[in-house]
Length: 271
Image (cartoon, rainbow, N blue to C red; front, side, top):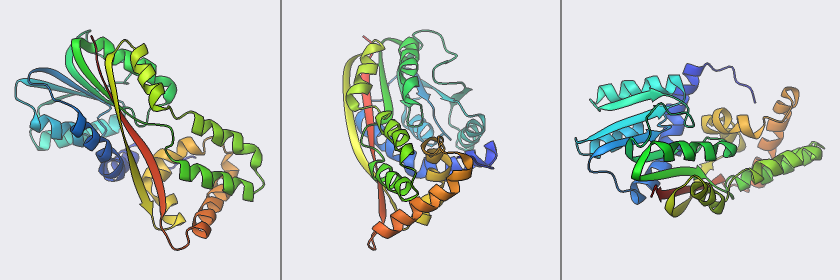
C-alpha cells in the first residue's frame, strides 16, 4: 500500500497514534517485568518518538547513563525535542537495530522494541544486543507473536474471496506464518547466545466501531497495511480495501470490530 505522506508526516502520526495506543501497551508489559539497573549504562533500541525511554530515564538513578537508538530520523528528531523539553539526559543515536554504533560489552541492560521489525531480522538484532551487553547484562525483547491479527486475516480472506481473488490467499497464509511463535522467539534468543530466557504474553485488543474507522486509523493504514497489502497490485488495492470494509460492516451485527495482538516480552541474561 503506497502513501503520499512525507517522512515527517508519518513521524508525527506515529507519535500521535502508534506511541499513544500501540507502543504504550508494550511499555506496560516492560514495566511489569523488567528490573531497571542501579548504575552503569542502559540502552533502549527502537525508542520510537521517545515516550517510554523518557519515562524510564526519569525513574532511573542519576548514576545510570541512558542511551537510545531510533532508526527513523524524523522520529528521532521528535524524541530528542521531547527529551530536551523535560531535561531528560538521554544520548540519542540514529542507527539500525542490527547495526548499533556502540562498543562490545558497553551496557548493563538493554530493551528492544521489535514490534515493527521483520521476523527475518530478529536474529541479527538479538545478536547485536548480545554483543553490546556486558557479561552479566540483561536484555528484553518486545514482539507481536503468532495468533496476532487473526480477526483481520480472516476478514481479508473473505474479502478476497468476494472479489474472486482466491489465488491471493497464499499471500495471507504467508503473513500468518511469518508471525513467530513464542517458542520461535525464545529459540532466536537462545541462538543469539542468551540464557535464563523467560517470556510473558499479553493479549491486547484494539477496537474499531466500523470498517471505515478501522481502515482510516493511522495505526492500520500507515503502519500495518503497507506490510499486509504489499503483495496486492496498486490498481487492485482500493477495490480490496472497499471489500474489507464491507465484510467488517456486514459481519459486525452492531458490535465493534476487534483486532487482537499477542504482545510478547522475552527477557534473558547474557551469561
